[in-house]
Amino acid sequence: MSSSGELAAQLSALFRSDKLDTAESSASAATKFITDKLNSHDSRDAEAQCRMLANIIDACVEEQVAQTVSTAVLGEVITLMSESASELSQDVRQTALNHLLSKVQQRTSAFESAIIETRQALARILISDEKWEEAARQLQGIRFEQSQRSYNTKQTFEVYVKTVELFLQADQLEQAAQAQGRAAALVAHVTDIELVNRYRLVQARINDLSQKYIDAAAAYHTISHSGLKDAAKQTEILERAVKCAVLASAGPQKMRVMTGLHREKMASSLRCFGFLEKMVLKRLIKPDELQQFSEQLEDHQRSLLADGKTTMLDHAVREHNIFVLSSLYTNIKFENLGRTLGVDAEDAELMCARMIAENRMKGRIDQIDGVITFEGAREVKEVSAAIFLKSQTTAQPPPMHFRESVAARWDERIVKLCTAVEESVDLLIERQPIYTKMLFRSAN
Image (cartoon, rainbow, N blue to C red; front, side, top):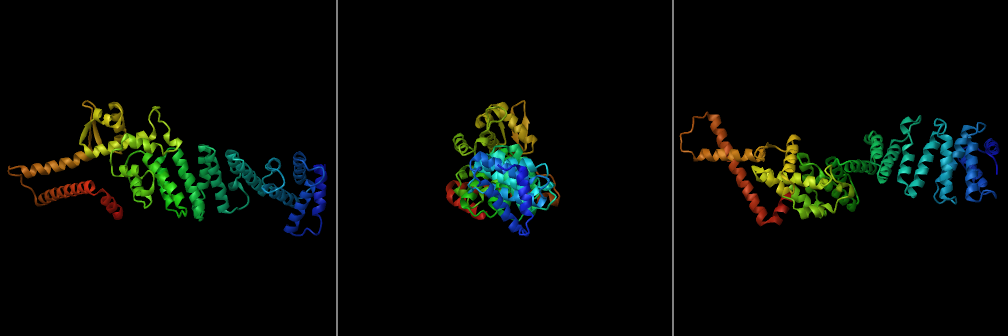
């Protein structure tokens, strides 16, 4: 078998020919040179093929071989190793590419294109073997931002997005988040909708896995409106959005996201629509409904909290039920609240205190009596009670300025109107639930 020195001399002699005056002729000559060496009588088994390819690669980086010759031959080696239909086995192709990378990666300025193409070829081979993390690390090693050449933004962005996708498939969340940061810097300059949707999807997935559920839900919802042609894919994305919205911490932002999802035309066809509707309409969630929805969640969404016994879904539903109860009661003892939520009084108090501290609910806690007063409900009832007492009193009312009397009459009318509307809606929901649902959906 020819040594690398002999092969280097042969290559130099070959490319000194006057016939090789174009890129096409040089590539053709390089391909013929490589295939002739691989088809020789002493290069027919896998081990011999690996040695021959290694010698050809070594010859290309010899000082006596011109840069143009090295670039042309290495380019054809990479092309040959990238062909899945090649007669060479996958092990031979992978071994040759790894050897090539080890020889040129310290000479980035001279072999920049060869390094990028080699890493991409290795990634494709590793993906076919389902070695997701190894493939991701090959793509991660491509440093377009340090390149002396200018590369197409779309191609660069696609490599970065693929890197994130592979790290996510390998369950490497931290690495995926780092790779996503590189893609984030380019997304504003990419116009390919499908490629941008791939980026948004991995971004939403990272938020989902990181338990940033409100951000994940909003991202999934946005993707569902980004021109997805596959109805099944759109349904899947919407279901992910609903699951993340349900798991998010209770509050106004969560309610806005859930209301938007509830208005979707495809919402009623989702498996989780019933659960979503009960949350949007502020109805208590029962234990059996909680269990049914839990079965639809992914493994990471069923993880336990710090107490080792409560899941994110348990926590989210308890917070939701507190909100529902806050609209039904002016105040409630923690003992009774805990019984309704399925926790003890102390845990119920801690949950309420946290929600009030985070400005997700208005209320006052009386630790001595073990009672919480819900401010929103109390304010409405106090206004109603004040107007009722004023209308019932027989004593001479104190003198009022004109503006004050007008304001008082308006307050009374507003409360009466709100009460009448609320009673009418409750009656309509009770007697005509199907029509009510259609009415509300058409209004949205």
